[in-house]
Amino acid sequence: MFGENWEPAEGELIDIRYGGKHGDWKGNGTEVANSVHYLMEVRPLSGAEPFRCECEPPSMMLSFKSPPFGVLVKMECIPSKKKARFDRNDPAISKKAAGKEQRAAYEAELHADISDPGRHRPDSS
Image 1 (cartoon, one colour):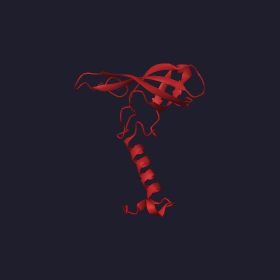
Image 2 (cartoon, one colour):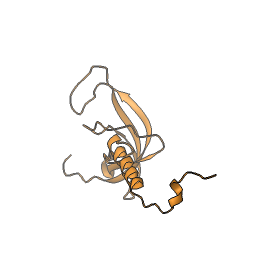
Image 3 (cartoon, helix red, strand yellow):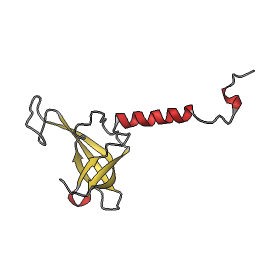
Image 4 (cartoon, one colour):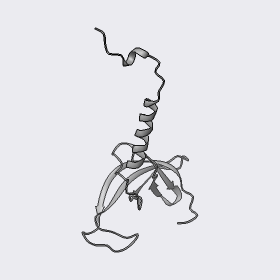
């Protein structure tokens, strides 16, 4: 757990699996009620061999949203143990990060230099 060297990776969602029984709270790190597991194809950016593993949503991340099918998302992995986890800062899985990205794009457009003064003028035809 501690001291493990997580390295950057990217992953693609293969399947979603649901587990647990309704109202069955067995404790931390075990099967919980209606738990969700994402089967991910993980590709380490170091060039190590790709692998598949099940990943759970990051704990205490209320802004988490399921990764979309067919879209690469940022992950972290330990290739030798075939372990992976989601990168909390990826806008593809974080409602909060996506909101920050949209806000930054809005601010950039708001403060952009207007190079064509006629672009905001109504048509005179």
